[in-house]
Image 1 (cartoon, rainbow, N blue to C red):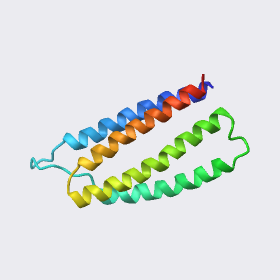
Image 2 (spheres, rainbow, N blue to C red; image 1 turned 120 degrees about the vertical axis):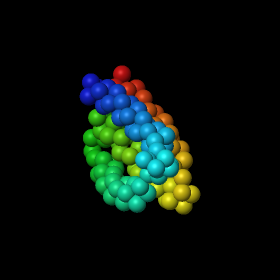
Image 3 (cartoon, helix red, strand yellow; image 1 turned 180 degrees about the vertical axis):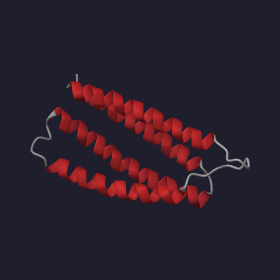
Length: 128
């Protein structure tokens, strides 16, 4: 239970740091004063590889015989959220490129923040 509690709080901290980074990129400007777009190809490539890894992990976790234990439930929450987040980042990368705007990165980043915090709160509730 203690590990699940630590993991839940750690997820919240990571979510906040991640969102601060999204805000920094959205509000930041390059040296020429032009809007700097996130690198959509890097977003997509990294997220696709992470998605593949997370789908495999989620499959293995689902097959586990000990999935009713708290740490396994927490891992299922983390990993299922990661799959959704990876899909969101791929979508954000496509939209950043298509719209030539960093707004999709901000919108998806906000959704990711909410999703991770929600998952962390579920884990903290499991740890009670």
